[in-house]
Picture (cartoon, rainbow, N blue to C red):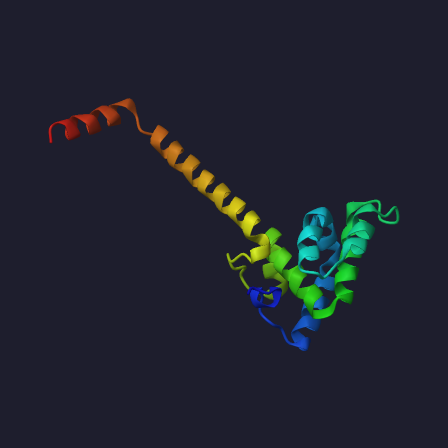
Amino acid sequence: MFTYEQSFPVWTEERCEELWERVEGVRHKLTRILNPAKLTPYLRQCKVIDEQDEDEVLNSTQYPLRVNKAGRLLDILRTQGHRGLQAFMESLEFYHPQQYTQLTGEQPTQRCSLILERTCAERKAQELLRDKQQVQRCVTKFSFTDVRWFLFLHSSI
């Protein structure tokens, strides 16, 4: 059976502290790009926040701005220790790969945990659609003369 711990590498206590320090070092930037409403469902499924935490972050009048909500979410995750950091880093890896690389020094992998399976499939579908559009653009670049020449060559075979 799959468990959350199997989906992400285990870090030492020193590595966790180092990563939290890096998060704090770019906290201003992170709070401006993070969308707590997008991250909290994943974090709840990982059981690093509960319904009350999610409600506090998303609906509390104490945090009227998205920036404030993101800051509060980071504070809550910090209290969750190792698991909070791992879930946060996995969500960054998926939703904000550049920030993940900036913080960890590692390239994001294209693996998706079972929790993100549906979203991963959606991302792959978007990539396929983008590839299809690129192929269509290439095809439309052929001129009518190119098509006639191609048909002529293939009809004589």
